Image (cartoon, rainbow, N blue to C red; front, side, top):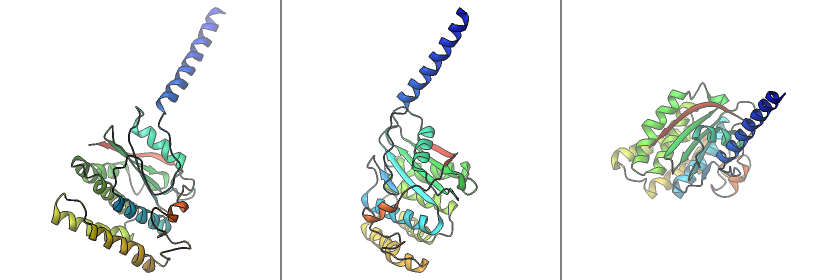
Length: 246
């Protein structure tokens, strides 16, 4: 009988220890989802943040792919893979039928990043492709402290795999790489940003057949009313993706 109580007590101790360990580790609070870019670490400049906002809103409206960017100051000792899954599943990125969600996560203090892929995008964005995007496009820019450009490049490359015919990404990719080749590592110019925003807000919506402002359109003003319509639709992480560091 004594041995029985010892076994039960040991099992209870293990269970309680696991609960305490998890509660200590999972200390990073996940905020409410308000828009395509949640830049809590404040590493993305406002022009590129608005640009990614507009691209992601247009992408979701046209293709059902929900591309989410999240930056945080620190993981607080939680591993980036488990945190990315927690975020993905709480925000429910992608709708509950196609489940085409993807998360680009950056943790600044740990110098870590991850692309977490939804269940509906496993075939379009396998782990090897996600790793290639991180290593070849995001990491080089981050090592030069060009965080905004690295994240924009990551967004463009993700869309190349998930939705290769999406017009906004193709146009911006062309302009972005032409500027990058001519100017080297310098930041994107304000006239270039304004030109791209003009294309995304006024030209592309009409070509795709939906309104720039109001209704079911996506160009509601970036940080303004358009963000109120942004939210998860019931998707879940596949557990796939890739991580990296700089």
